[in-house]
Amino acid sequence: MARIVLKSIKPNQQKQIFSKVYDGKKQNEYVFCITCIFNLRFLCMIHNSYNKEKAFAFLEAILQEYQNCSKNSDFNNGQFSYQLCLMMKAFNQFDQKDALTNLEDIVEDLNESTFQNLRKMIKREIRLVVLVKKTEELTKNADIIFKFSRNVHRATRGNEFRFGGKYIHLFQIYYQISKLLK
Image 1 (tube, helix red, strand yellow):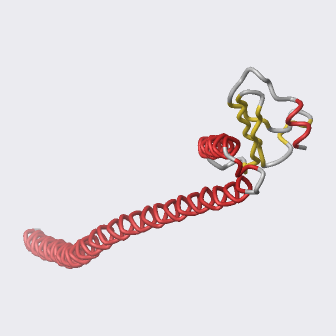
Image 2 (spheres, helix red, strand yellow):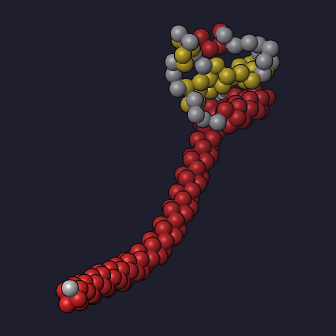
Image 3 (spheres, one colour):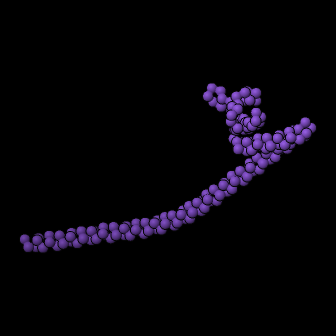
């Protein structure tokens, strides 16, 4: 894959990103970041979600180390490969620290959203307590109104009977008087 990438590099661009595409879709989750300077090509393969700027910073560090080692006789003694190994560890540890920082941020956001949800639940609980009290008051008032209206209904019905009884009593008196007068 690296040979294919190296063949497709444009020599006039300093920084390039290469990802293999099959049938119009990206095949892998990995991409190649490439730096070209003075016919020297340095490339590294990274995960698609990895920060590309960090990858290019890593490639710049490799370039600087390569230039330092090639000026000295350390290049042939394996110093460059040793420095390359150290730089890879350093950049990967830096990335792990970023991942830890990202996780801490996520946990912090989750804690904040949890506290906000708890506050909302407490407010809802207070509102529910108020609604329960109002419901109890309305129930008591409804019972009082029901009893009052029942008593009023009974009283008016009793008055109707009394009035009706008085009417019947008057009718009887009228009937007896009319009988006497005949």
